[in-house]
Structures are given as C-alpha cells and as structure tokens.
Image 1 (tube, rainbow, N blue to C red):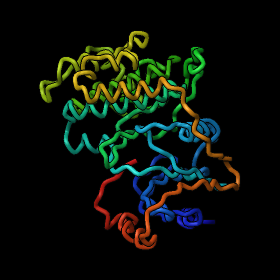
Image 2: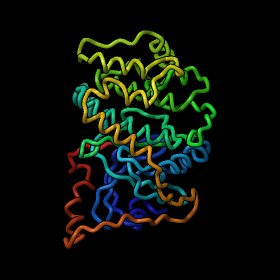
Image 3: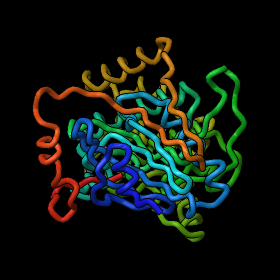
Image 4: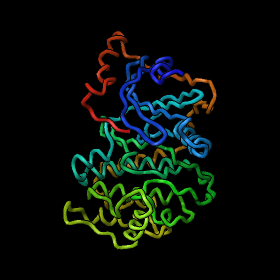
Length: 346
C-alpha cells in the first residue's frame, strides 16, 4: 500500500507534520515542489467513512470547493484521489479564529468588525451561488499571514436552487456544532439553511466581542436541552468586555429565534455597526458590487471517487533564477513539527 508521503511525492508535494485531525480526515503541512509554496493537505481515508458520508456529503464538499472562488474562502489548488483516499491540497493559513480568541480572551470591536465583514462577504458570495455552509464556527474560520479571513471546511455544505429564484426545499439534515446551531435545527424541524447560516454568523460575532458562547455549547443530548432553553431567554451581554450598542443591536438581530424575522445579509451590510467604519463598509460594498457582476464559472477539476485517475492540474508559478532546491531547503523547517514554532490550524 502506498503511503501518503510516497503518493504525494509522486504528484509533486513533500508531506510535512500533522496540523489537525478530524473524524474522517487529517490535515498536514506540505511543500509544493514546483514552486516551494507551503500548502495544507487534507487527507480523507475512504475506508473510515460510512456510506452515507461517502455518497452524500463528500461529493458535495468536493463539488463546492472546486467551484467557489472568493478572497475570503480557502483556495483549493488540487484534488487527487486513489482507490482508498482523497487528497485536497489547499492554500496555507497560519491560525484560526478560535486560537486568536483563546490567546486574547476576546477581539476588540474594530478588529472584530474587519473580520466579520470579510466573513459576511464570503457568505454573501456563497448564498448568491446557491451554496449554504451549514457548519460556520470558529475552527472553520482561518486567518492567513495578511490578517485575512479564509472560510473553510465545506463537508456539510449544500447547494440550493435559489440561483434560479426558486425557493429551495427546507433542509432536514441536522448538522453543525450544537453551540452554533439555530433553534430550528435543535428542534429538529425542517429549516432554511441560509437562515441557519445567519444564526451561526451571530454566534461567531458574539464570541469574538464577548469571548464566550451566547448560549453555551456541548455535544450530548443534555447540551441540546440546555442550549435550547438558553436560546429562548433574552440575550445578555457582560459588563466586561464592553460592547457598543450598535454591535449588540446587530447581534440580537442575527440571533433572532424566529427564523422568518432574522436579519438578512443585505440588512447586515446596512447595519449601523458595519457602517461605523468607512474602511470596513467600503470593503463590504465593494464585494457586493463585484457580486452583482456576471461571474465566470471556475473550471471544475475532475474527480472520480474510488477510481484510479490522479488529478494532475498544477499551479504554475515563476520565482526567478533562484535554484528550486535552495528554495525548498529554506522551507524544510515547516516539514518538521518539532522544529517549527509557528501555529497553524485547519
């Protein structure tokens, strides 16, 4: 059986240390040999996933990540597969929002506004293309070296028919992390996935500016009951850290229990808090203007699950006259997690 390292080397990547692990996959650093770029590789072991995930969620994830192209969505460079594994090669990010909040306890409003506008812009882009994320949480919000948000992990994403102006059927797959789930999901009633994304956006904003979860979190049946009860009560804000009235107002509108009354992405862009700083509101308006223009579809990368074909679409880049070997050697510390002090998460 070919190891991950040997297979990735055969398609032009040097595998490094493990960054993170999930139920069905793990993430590694890697270096792209052709240009010495540091990338992240998500390895999905098909033998460890159930048939439902393999036939329903995995194809959706692969389809959506190959077609979404936005500055605040993680860019996928290549998808390759063998009989037993799928390799998703992505741009590299140094940290995520959860780590930043754990490090600083909370995020000052000016920085929170900057990141929130980027995240809302990514969600606006997705929704206009009929894609609901359905798993927005701190761990899935990466931050690169330029302080730019990168939304990732589209394992629960769903394509809807709204691009054609037809209201989609409500979702009946109750997915996501409990602390970020909308009340309609916890009640296990059919729900609008776009509106549940908005709720999760509100939880993220609250977590940024306050430092804690608005309704608690957990992963068992008892947590479902506790979170549901908390959601039915009036939302409270602590005296410290102090949050502005405009920020609280937006969070309350995002976390409206009745989904039909919940704020929309268009309303978010017009809110007082988002428009408080001209730089952030200008960024949001620019993104909206770009979204209004007819978009050219991103050419999809062919993927055949369970087949033997290897996807060999390479990212070509020129880096001058410097020797490729010397460039790779400069990046080699990243491949050894014991020598690498930088923090990265996916």
